[in-house]
Length: 394
Image 1 (spheres, rainbow, N blue to C red):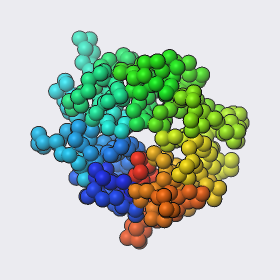
Image 2: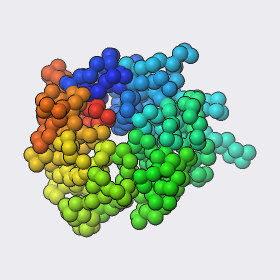
Image 3: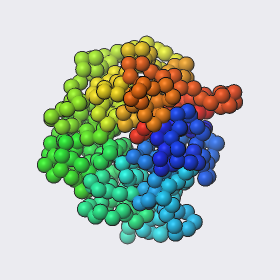
Image 4: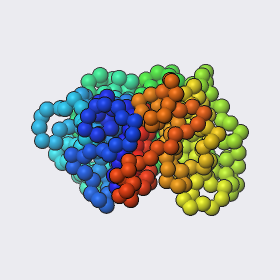
């Protein structure tokens, strides 16, 4: 599998060997690439850095690293300012071992959060337990390690989290807050909380400096996604279950779930959704297919801010996969072409934009470079970050 990127690149976060923005998909570089049989399963993008997680649990990072958010150097004591190609993340653990594989990753604006299962020896037995490792900066408590303003040392993990006997089953971050779902069904959050993004019981704290439980969730949570200052908690997808935690002032209308989405909550065979994504100020629901299609494709429904054309245009057909960035969207279509729309000032929606750098009221079709297509490459996945766009190519 190969990965191609385009869009904002001022810190090298596209991993294409330089720091210039590009508007055409460009193949990413690796200092040590993943094995041929180790596919990329997640792309997590911060403000100026990017993390990749592979099926075998390997994490690769690129972009701004002034505070160590991309991990420590592997063979020197010098912390590079920017990583211009993807480098493997390996962390020291206080018990003296190296942590080389991870289960979950997420990225805040200036930080990285990585969950690993590591050996924990006790007087009675030796077993593996989850640890939540954190890297980078934490001005709003988004790394969950208390009020220290200093970037944590490599190998720092959140103390006593997750609670003994539980594991992390899902993880997501917004610009300044993080939410984790645990194996016992409980949900914890930390970071910015004044806009109700961590629920009403934590809102008055304004900043939650260490993991605290989010209360009053009306269903068993299966996952979460984070907008800039709101959170969407996911329940049973087949029943259309989800809840939005956000500012009651509701400036961008993210709390106003439209009737077309409410109808997915019926629990009927035609209801439900495949996935949910969030931009800084919008929510995107990938509805379950109404008919059997190969590959499965469903309508993309969305609401929230639309001043840049971020919401799906009427011309967008049913989609196979969706990736939602800060204020733009990539959609993989059944014919394996990719549609982009929204804020594209940095080239992240391609070359064809209006005078404000937007793709509004329509969508662009983005093609792989000729050489990749001539070699038989096909887009099998998409990713999106802060004005960055990604193709996964088989």
